[in-house]
Image (cartoon, rainbow, N blue to C red; front, side, top):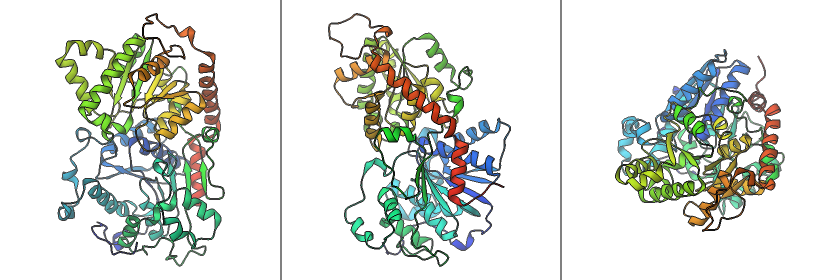
Length: 509
């Protein structure tokens, strides 16, 4: 760090107002990273009667606005503004968001040789400081660490909130970084937080950004004369189940300001006797018509992983799952991020060009889970399915766990393999590689659909009934569903909002 900033599109700080009347939530990433913060921010605004500005990607803004309207039907309508940063979410697809070029910053033309992702990060960074105008406090997720530096520049409190475990993907602090900074920080609690997640603040790209907004590039320099304790790491709140983390053997760093506030899911998604008005009609029809329904969703991976973005691999995956569904006498609802995804396009083309493929694919119904205005209630849907196939995102894993449904985890990247292992350890999930052997897929889908625990013989065409389920399979599902229900009684989103306020030094009005 310490190099002069280049290509960092940051306006002069003097243009930022100093009124301290709004709490800013910076939420970048995919829908799964953003929506948990949206719900927390809303309840924060309701409980503390403070205006909130929620900052996210332009393609997620319609979805966030629709969720805000839905939350307003409760009769509570705080001052809550959704502010768009003109970049795509990690799951953004061209058909579901405006073209990036039409929203690029005017100075971006001088950076035509930059990788699109680098250019996108520059646009995001340029927008973060203006988005924090008038901030009384700043809350950020781990895809927007710049919020920490902006809070330091504006001299306001800040905190981090994450729906996944850091570090992203399970990687450790880069070699050499520990030695470079370890001797300068003596406080054990601070160092524990740095080792756990805050080491990313010491990377060069952060230093360049800090220089661009007028801070010392070296994070550990105490550039703010109002601080007396030297370098301080903000608190970090995990939106995860403490019971699940404990069972998985995860130990959060003691004394480092890291806490686990629970998986505060939307209670309506799990409430008994609720109507079906929030579900798409096609989802309701499938659930009513078929006794063995498997729900498939890969979240933002639809736009990120080659197994789902390349036509050939998407076709192979579709055919494999469709044939496994036929053998298990099951039907699948497959949620895609957009009709433009490779899975959706391949599904349509195969049905149009091959009658035999079309008959096989009749086992699958494709739905667009986020048209970026519609959010399917996963908890409500999962509880009516035989099983769920997913990528192993922390939110989807917890939601299926709370619904008491079997899971087949197909990890693709990041922390997904960790959650697959946790699911197997808890006895509620199996894992399958996306390019795994057909026999592995066949047995896993049979298990999801309610078949026997063991593998089926190739020549065994006898229908396997639900009554053959092994007790050791069903008991963990019920037990962990109960654990989640108990946690939801106390680890509510309102309680998390109160915890966050205490971390920020705010009090009830």
